[in-house]
Image (tube, rainbow, N blue to C red; front, side, top):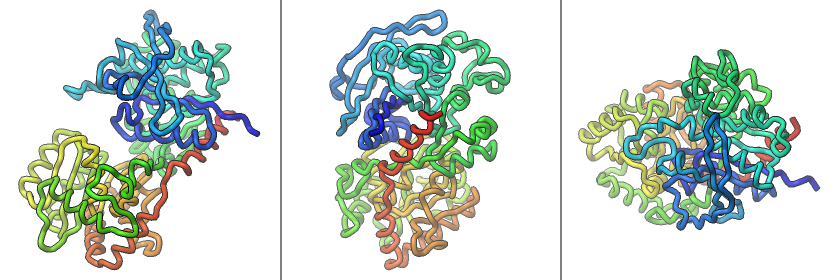
Length: 492
């Protein structure tokens, strides 16, 4: 029998303890799926001030441990709990200076990124390695995620290259969104305990006169992956998707893989969802209509005499997510027989423009400038369609949630959207949504128009909804691929 692989899964955010984006969902679900496959997986994250020790039953297990960064020394204390509904241990690194505040990356009052993020996440990376050295549990492999953990492979290959405990520990580095790279002033190198040469021009951490934590992870990790097969190709092909790192990625192409994220169906399933107005399944869709009524009421929208399809969006209000396209043809969209609800926050210009649009069309558009998990579930359950016109989308989860809720996706063919949604007009037998290729407002408008016309054909729409709800993007499939990826890293 093969030896059990021991994996430490390191992330800056993990559901349900702290969440800013999709990384938290992955970090809260993938380790549990890996544990079901027989791996010894443990998770580690910072202990932010917002994480309740009482609510999550945290127990202090180790510390204080001294951590040297440059000329300064900090201490870290370890706390432990278990991921909900699992036997997966999660460890929290406590440090008053760097993590006692409530925000993960930014001040919760101002929205501004913390000025010391370079030090905060360097400390997190270094502290978890010092903990391994002192604790006695040595992973075979550390799975690092995004720029916040980009220095783990660097420390292992430089500072701890000959350490009797850490030497030989392999690394997998996951890119969840290449746009967020962790770029900081070059002089930071002297404060984070790494060799000065790494910051020199053309070296592993230097990037246009700055330090780049993600670049460092890409250079030093044993194996790299990103969160869909399509995105793994896109980020090597052009500066638009590679965001300046396309050359580095191409140089590591032999070690770069794409594995689609999965869906936690214990949380996103209309048959079990406690956050929607009425649960329902493929055999009886009457509950979906009741959720639509509840959703319209939540946004103070009328039930129009002629029933129109209701399109939902849950998104950061940002250029990446296609809101520039929506505003270019907003009048044309709202001239169609449809209603639209949008939940999210983001760029202030989109807040203002969408608010103005909502005032002009109060019966056709609902807007909630907030993060609201309960409302997000109701949108998935109550909308007829879900719009994701992203400029790029490493994976995307809402299109997969939508399928299970019988809410038909309208997407641009990019990244994980292209890997999960097939156009029903091009593939009538197995299509599960409406897809447009070019990032153009008229192409998006045409896809929305095709969806509205299909909705008017009741029999065709019901078949499409039924087929969509049969899709299975559970984490089990992805976990199998991650196990294979870990094996590749261990064999390097």
